[in-house]
Amino acid sequence: MIGERAVLVEFEPEISEKLLEKILFYKKSIEEYYIKVNVEVINTYNSLLIYYISNIENIYNEVLAIEQLLSTPNITKKVNSILFHIPVCYDFEFGLDLEYLASQKECSVEEVIVLHTRPVYTVYFIGFLPGFLYLGGLDKKLHTSRKEQPRMKVEKGAVGIGENQTGIYPKSSPGGWQIIGNSPVDFFDRNIQPPCEIFAGDKVKFYSISRKRFDEIKDEINSGNFQIKKENYEG
Amino acid sequence: MKAEIEVLQPGLFSTIQDLGRYGFLKYGVPLSGSMDTYAAKIGNLILNNPVNVAVLEITQMGPKLQFRAATKIVITGADLSPEINKISVGNNSIHSINSGDILSFGKRKSGCRAYLSISGGFQSSESLKSKSWYEGITEFSKMTKGKSLAFESASVSGLDTHAKVKINSDYLSEKEIQVFPGPEYGYLYEKEKKLLASTQFSVDKKNNRMAIQLQETIQNNLDPIITGPVIPGTIQLTPSGNLIILMRDCQTTGGYPRIFQLSEIAMNIISQKVLGDKIIFKLDSNFIKPGCL
Image (cartoon, rainbow over the protein chains, first blue to last red):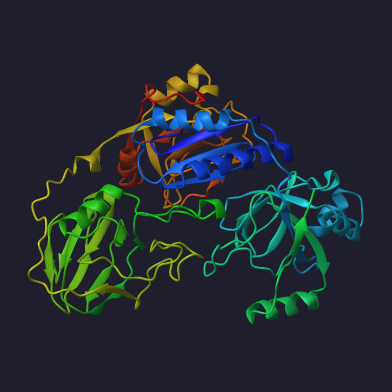
């Protein structure tokens, strides 16, 4: 429970796909329970937050109702998620920390790119900034601490690594992650509904593009001719 | 009839706000909305507007605005010495405006944020179901010289307004901040809990719509948490011992321990504090305990 407007449900302090599936199961049942009431339900790695638009009138009723929903066994069926193929340009123009990362890991820049494009990442949730995906599944070899001095400005689209996480900055912002590339794709568009087409539980895979292709995709996006490649994904 | 206000001088920082943007937390979009919801609602109430219509939130140093049509306005919240055509006017009462009138502000006398309500509400464009300005979400995110603000000009007479609403302005100088224990409060040592209860904290210069920081630090024995949900009013304790009160434009998730959660009234009180103002936390632990689920 936090404050007068929210109920917080915490699960085991861990980051795993199994726990994510469980949390998304309960998220759905809570959303369905509250379908007629003004609440927002968000999840993170190990929490569910139920946020009420106005102050909660009878907190005990709400807690009881949520407790009941949580006591139903979670029969997580394998839900089909969508795999999004995201283009990333790993040119040195964008990959400001690529060489640093390669030297830290005693490998070539090419190897860093291979390690970063190989995994199928899981989208745990969206947070921090509009359209910022929290991705799990970064190769252990690429785990790197954040920069000691965060940059005042990280460019929109920048692809970075911070500890065991990797992600894309949906807009320019201050940031402390090691920057290895840039994606021309927009992850958040206030003019479309929903403003972000990737959801918690979906999958992401990166593919490397040339500097030239980066500009082409930018143009295609501006003229409305670019579609992110996506397919059904069965784990 | 569509009408406009021209911004002659932008002042320090002013934004259009309604009561917030709901339904988009799951995409990482902040809730936004007026920092001091009491002042914002009171202004609309006096004008007989729906409480959630957009107002102008004015921070510390007010703008200079010229009206291009007749209307009625109310100023609430902080006392920033408002003047209409260089004649001093008061907060919390209705002022009739004629086309060409100039609203300006002078010395800050109390509080931090004033609210300008206008008959019918500001008519700026909506994005994701709210008019609240936020960079990247709405077309504009800050007021600049020469910009115009849209409103709906109504006939000046014949409006049934609540001119006699009783306003309580004591909260502008209130020091006591009501808080509830946050999810990680229980992990603090007794010594730190006592310090939090007994220290008079001062508001830092880092004070904006995202967060308000406090000057005094306390020792932090807590580990960072796995990134989890945060909401406006959550107080985070950073590794260096700083207390950060998250405000209306705060991010939706964070990794610092969440030690307190402000009450809604406390949110209004803290929104009216400026650099050096003192606050004391009043912990309400009779409230439902964290971890009861």
